[in-house]
Amino acid sequence: MNSLVENGSMFQTYMNTFERSNYNSMQQAYLHPTYEAGKALFNKNIKGAIINLNLIKLKETADYSTTPHLDPGKPISGLEAYNLYIKEALPFLKASGGEILFIGKGDSFLIGPADEHWDICMLVKQNSVQDFFSFEQNPEYMKITGHRTAAIEDARLLPLEEYILNNK
Image 1 (cartoon, rainbow, N blue to C red):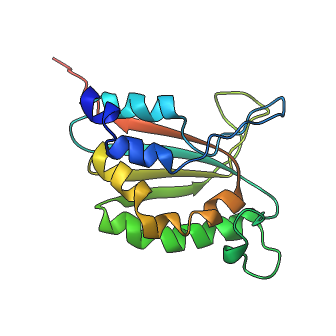
Image 2 (spheres, rainbow, N blue to C red):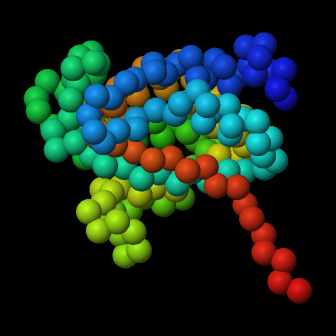
């Protein structure tokens, strides 16, 4: 598998779709995966489905300055922009074999930092890591991701691999 990464694999194509952003603020925002994180996921060689745990912090007002062609023509909230993203991304997700298992309204942690909160929590299932990368690099899907970027202030994405407890 490592030779695939070195020779311009699906992973490399996926990672090339994201610009590497530098944040000058004291608290770093995360909107896209790093090269290193994507490579680590690819190199895990996970067999079977993954569930992606998404934690989303929304902007109060969506910012379409980097994707003016998607701008709805009037100010909208981050939530409205994220809803547009989900609506337009869902057909691509389903076509790749993926599905949204859960979307819920987030809030403050019961266990965790008191000053940290997330507006949306979402679980998305993909049949494989390869299907996830294929979904993310679909050229038609990439055309609508500006809604996500306009909506999100910060995000976390944790790919989960099934773990079976051995209770003997």
